[in-house]
Image (cartoon, rainbow, N blue to C red; front, side, top):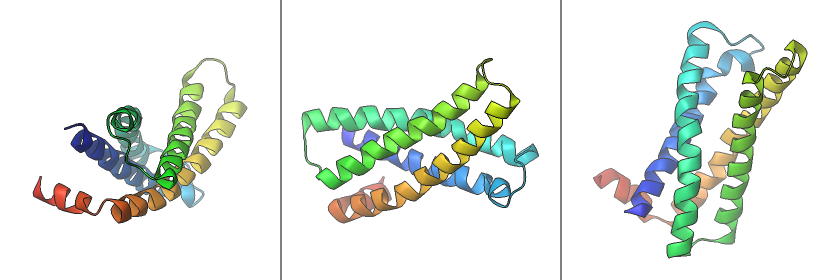
Length: 143
């Protein structure tokens, strides 16, 4: 049961990260993110902000119960948690009354680059998971 929940949480992380990448395309083109694109980005971020910590907790719980993971996958996931946490943290810092406008713009710039790292980092994670656990695809198709 925990394994299925962890897989579901990981799927939510991947889907939300892809949605965040797609909705950030105006900023990739050098434009400002506003209007419907910003609303969609903010909506997708809610899923990411919830799914990433849930997946991390379930992953750690799984490792305590049945430690069957390669060092490569563990390292990839730990880096994902760090980069994902930094991405979330930069936006949280913008919501505090401490940074001025210039600092907020810098935090948003850093947030964008860290977000790109998260998306790029998910590629080897997904590939590694599909290679080391071929039953994942079958298990998700039958569910």
